[in-house]
Amino acid sequence: MSQSIIWATHSIRQVEWVNAFAEAITGKPVRTAPKVGIVFDGPCRRNGFRVGIPTPLYLSRYYNMITANPVPTDDTSTYFGHGPYSLDQGVQETVSW
Image 1 (cartoon, rainbow, N blue to C red):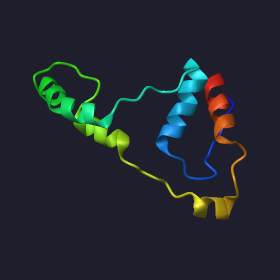
Image 2 (image 1 turned 30 degrees about the horizontal axis):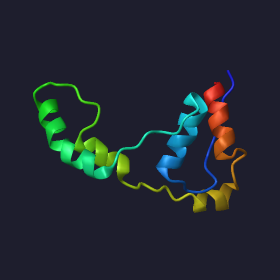
Image 3 (image 1 turned 60 degrees about the vertical axis):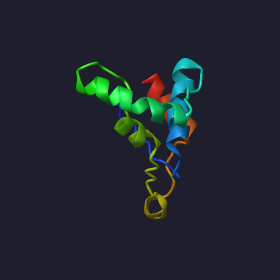
Image 4 (image 1 turned 180 degrees about the vertical axis):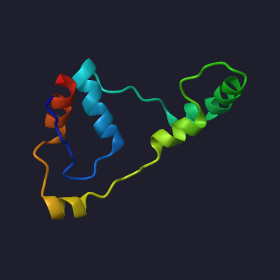
């Protein structure tokens, strides 16, 4: 069994990572919605979720998706050097797997 180890050479925004995979798999970038529409629609979705109506997106999940969670990789790059793959190469390796 072969194993690929892929690590980032720098911090990237989550949307860049998600778009790279979306475009590799579907050929299209991810669809986005205006924040204001989701925020106003959130209470309805939350209440639906509470009574058992399945909903793919509710406010807490939305906030989790838009919150920046950067992972500092400078120390890793200093100690181990840059990874052997770029983001695009890593995405292609993962998608082909």
